[in-house]
Length: 432
Image 1 (tube, rainbow, N blue to C red):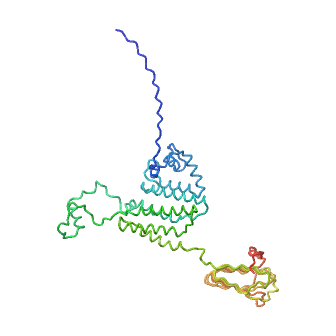
Image 2 (tube, one colour):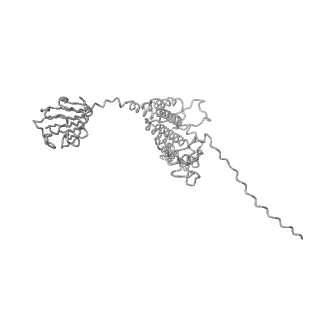
């Protein structure tokens, strides 16, 4: 028997080079759907430094994670835009392999809330870039809360009413049940020919879903965002009252539509809120009369008036430059309904001060201080050349000062009192 020669072993095949699989670029629709975002974990190729937000954004938009991290950090210094995006994604976007984030919302609501957060961040960034602006934070927060409630209304309702029954445990409706339901919804006796056994059964108490509520909130958010963008870009002045007026117009329009198509849900309540806020935002603080203030630094007794009075404001009277010998027992009245009275008297003058607070306030007369509710009177006399004061009113005083304030403060200091340093020596601001 001939043994055939041993066949040589075949050479080790060279492993084929892996084909360079080209990663498919995400479509525009996928990029717009922010509900597909997932925060990365430490095991993800993009890495994770804090909460995985930057890595998740980079993976979703197919960009370098380092670029996203740098942009977020830089945007923090421009109106806090980077922080707004990061915090919103942190609480709304679930981690990789999870379905819910820290705040459980459905994919459509998550997509809407993330886009709203991005719009707020853009408004903040533009506002910081173009200067100080009036960003409607209150209305944006209200819209965010309403959108969050709308997204979770089903889950919160199930929590209050218990878990929904499983399909397997729900008994199949029998013909008797259907007949009973029809009997509850159709009037009896039925007119001949009005009963159709093939017509769909409408259970009593069933309500149509609020078809217009979500659309109204989306349109309101869009309108407020456009107004904020116009305001921050300084294209045209946008008054504060424009925001509740726009919301009122949007909600009113959808209420009209709701009368013919669908239900508007809770838009009546939101419209009432906007209506209540409208007159408040129309008040211009610059047009409110806050009273007037008096500041006088007379250099001689001829420039000193016999009385000073304000309804609401401040009275500052610095008499430190007046020669005490020229006062000659002069009487001076200062009255204020609401505000502060400050008087500086010369050290070398004998001054009798009668300070009265009508309702609420404080009086600092030389070295005596008193404050009370319900009104009080404080009488002190400063003797020429001496420190401090004595109780009572001296009849031979160089100056008889009567200071009255209904609500506020009365301050009477000697020229050398450290508390008077902020008011003495400013004669260049004198009002003749």
